[in-house]
Image (cartoon, rainbow, N blue to C red; front, side):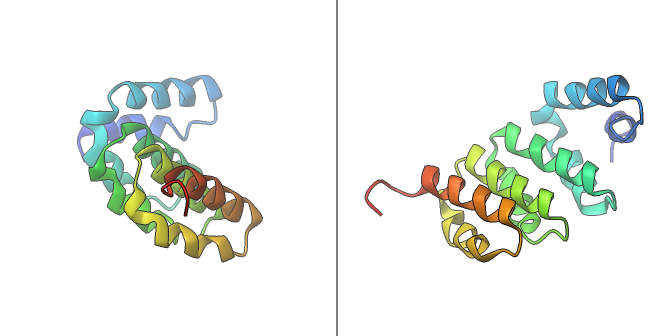
Length: 128
């Protein structure tokens, strides 16, 4: 991981919300360039809040390159991350992930089921 993003990801976990938000915004501004670092951060982070933020940022990239990580996040152990993965797949327009989102309709967590239903309503072709 490049040092700039390693530092920003570390600052995103700061207890001072102003510093954490500033780091999030810096990554958001660079989101296209940060994509490989976001993927690596998701894969290595043990912090659910950080994984949530990374999935959200990956959705904001609107890049097809984010989709494999977003799909992997549908199985994250944290329900908030799974729900955000549903929303992020919608954000990137991943209509090929409809089957995977349908599987989330039976998730044990209601927020995940709701996010999956909303994503499906957006991604499914009209009339299906």
